[in-house]
Image (tube, rainbow, N blue to C red; front, side):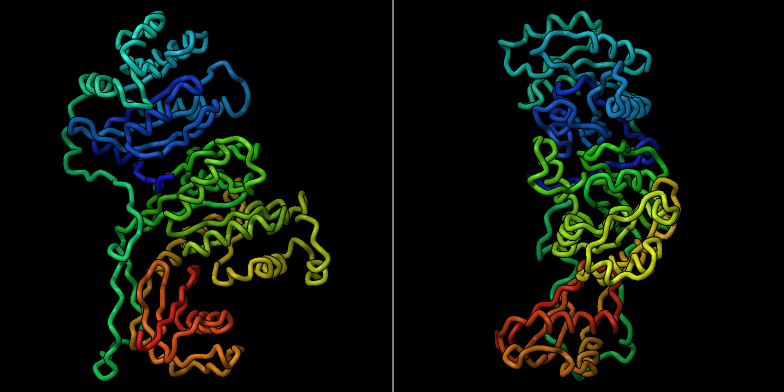
Length: 511
């Protein structure tokens, strides 16, 4: 599976830059997402044989003959379908049609023309946009006769293509460029590119050399922060199905960007949207609900979980959404562990808190040990937080916010926390500060066996995002877990690093 790409830009920005939007529409399972992936050059959309995989709108940037284009993939449209999910897909597609400068209707060349195709063409003509018909799955010249039946749709600009193999797409987009208005203002606008995998070469700063203890600067007193206001902070919204991730995305972006329904697993493709707040850019990424392998049966569900993990690994900060009415489950702890181990900063978002304090729904039935620990009423915020901290001990650094994504209550606290955590994630402590810190730490308080103890000669911060510290010790030995945890707690007490995990590595002096 390829790394996720985040190359969609906001509607206002692309419109102002004169970048035209091309909407890809059609019935379910005709190859729209395959065409989308082919044009944008990445596996942005989940593709499979099951109909109805794509539900939300997916955006991507492309360039054709030197012209920048914005491509939007939509879910399969069934205009007459009255069920919740199909009607929401249709509503999302209507938004894409309103934005589009041209429309590509995709049909399956290997299936007969059906009533929904005729109905869809009738609706598309009402949009008064240039309309192009892409007859997909025409893989060779011998199959070119498959398009004859589709003349009944009355679309003169018809092209046989194979999205799987790239056949005929050049003719299609050459024709689209001919009808687009000339573009004058997008020449100086940079194209958003897919992020490359991290490597030592691309880290923020290389590992510093051993310190000079005699020549330190007098004003070297406080940690510094690599705070670049132009840096885009990627925020992945994670959690198990049906905890309110899509509702939270819509609330934070003040839009109906993602489909929301009470059906678990509604979101499949990751949906992203950019928000600017106090001069900083946040890209919120609504991921599919992560569930256990044994609970995923359809291929689309399995791929959506895989892609959710990929998008988590590509993010800077994770918003871990927990359903307040259910409490912390083992699955929540597993999802939090994925973010913690991958070095993502974390904010714990307790959603649906209004249902708990109103008494409409009670938290999940506590275990015997939980009942012994909790003597206050379930709606008490301090008691709930104490129980949550107990269940997620390894996230003692993560701030907690109680919200109701549906009503928006409490969500105003999220942006200040994101700004704080993003700053802390990129904070750098100088080597002189670290060595003064080491001198003050009483390591006798660390409950570590004598054979596992080491003498720290000096300590330095090697990198940021996440903050990584290297200990130079008198002998090569793996740090004991208790020793590492004690040192991490001491670092947090001295320097903060709110919301971000801390990585500690050690090296022997002579290695």
